[in-house]
Length: 449
Image (cartoon, rainbow, N blue to C red):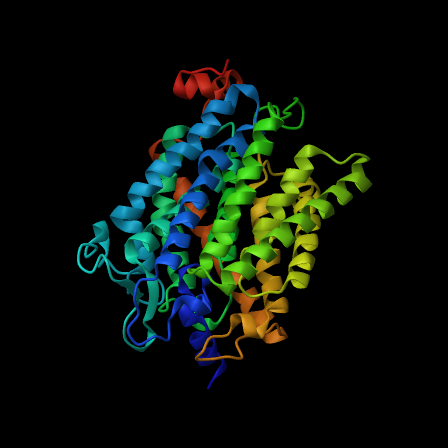
């Protein structure tokens, strides 16, 4: 069996948010799969807590780090994206991501979620022919679980453009970006027809699709919009770090649904994914605080919560493939990489990534994706069809590099083009006077307190 064929065989049971591996306990090998109530219950729970990561988790996390005059506008961005992407996913996004299509994009067979009424109570089968993947959950759960990932990916981008982007521009941009960037990349990585899936690159729960995708888009958007008024000269301290701590705490808890839910079953792989998620996040907190203590003299609350998110981001692509010891290394690397990305890198390059969407999600997503190729543990990534699975190796590392580079370049170019289109239609940025007064009042006519 060739390496690509072996990788595809390993990956077939993984599809949902595994890009290369599904839960071994998902009964893929069963000739006549049936809905498993335990798996379905776990996926329903995971779906709910992943949605909680955006509202209220990310909304509070981001809102706590902006100035008082922009708190409501920042929360509004997460909340509005939740509604917008939810509708887009139902109308067209799901079909473009998980329709049969070709190696690059899904077809229109699932527009408006057509066909959901037929076989609604049967196990969902993704793909067709020899490449078909049978699950033990109904498609309605699969659709909603995937929807929550599309939602938070778009919402993450708002952290890079906080305090200065028009609400109308954001809504138009998110519409175009979700359909033309997120959905194609999701198809590449998570559908059996996708070219990255067939390549054998590993992404258990969204290192490329979610974090690198959102981080790179955020970086491009921050550069195109330019710096905030007063950036580098005025005090831009967070208004309420307590909000941010509560939001980060919700993200941490919700991430268990994000990663362990990506096993698409309530079994051993989900348990290991949950364990390594916790280990990596804990290690990253300590690494970020140590770096901050050593360079600034004091460990900060903002550093602690940023470190946790950095570790959670980095373990995402690896969660179903690595052992706890490797997860700790990934977390420690992520804490240091995230600290560097949010401080030194931003300072050296001179861009204003308001809430470090690229510094944390982009940088740590890249680190996690690459380290997955180093630390993948064969038995974890194996299936009954290919028990040996894929282990970390130089060859696998190169596949990870290729996948990361492809997503980085595609997202950067596509995002730049979409931003220019939006700018031509409605304009991207509020006026200087509106920015100084605050977006809460100028965009939404409301004020906090």
